[in-house]
Length: 386
Image (cartoon, rainbow, N blue to C red; front, top):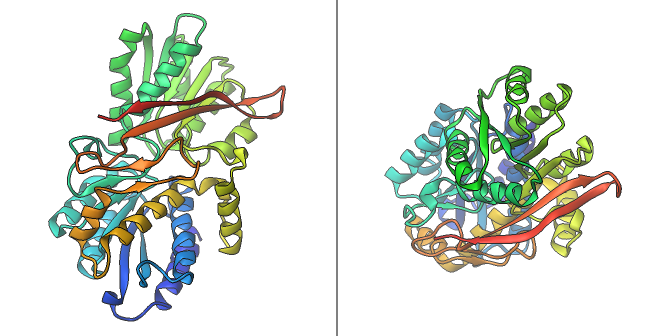
């Protein structure tokens, strides 16, 4: 149903465009629109669809329409590879977007690199290759990123903990998640923490109790998880069912805002680079109105990542001009600067050597039972990306 809803709209949009590919900017996307991780990725894809629909109705970019070709990969590497090959060889995409699990990265990178087509990771974790010195054809607009997120989260624990930290670590058994938790483990000693458990949980796991039991029995009083939301939330829920009363710090994926309200857990902290929609900024109201007008089945508060990615693509296409080529788009991306209008703590700015951002901002939220609302646990703080 998710796949039909998003792809059906994308095909309708494409059908309204001029028939010849050279009359439109063709952007390809492979994403996890179905399968267990779809809840993390599909809303961002729909946000891009809505953004480009609005842009096309307003005249497009440089007088040309944007044709967004969406392919579902169900977070399966084989499907992602086939999608990427089709997008570059048949659809002649100027840019390919990956919105899926990190297990799909290698085959998609291989196909786009062979074709000389830039690859944007959007609403999908930023790989280290976009950090300085960046791979020429890889870019990432997503809020979460390897190494910096662990530093920000562990720094928050260090600042907040009132007793010695016995740390449990949780990852999903996929490359980037596991790598980040391994990195976090290397940082704990210098912070004075003791890692007492590290659980790497397979994606299809039906029962999180065995992993939670190991963490609880090891004596963890803090847990840090950096993984797709399903792993993060099921881990904390499993721990609470066991009676664990410690503090749990995790990444603020796009589900986080609704989930904080559902769980009402004052000791669950979400660290993120996006402002939650509860802040009620003008850009949040704009997205809410666009989601309603665009007939989205997803909550507007899950659309920030897709919206930011679309802002970046619009800016790059304007700079690339017409007619565009993959190399012109890559060159434009390498010098893009986008005002996120408050969706992030600062702008997205890329250079030839840095395709992540020059400064990464973080904010921490939690549920406050006394106010019956989400509150800021730590306001914006930043790291220079070098």
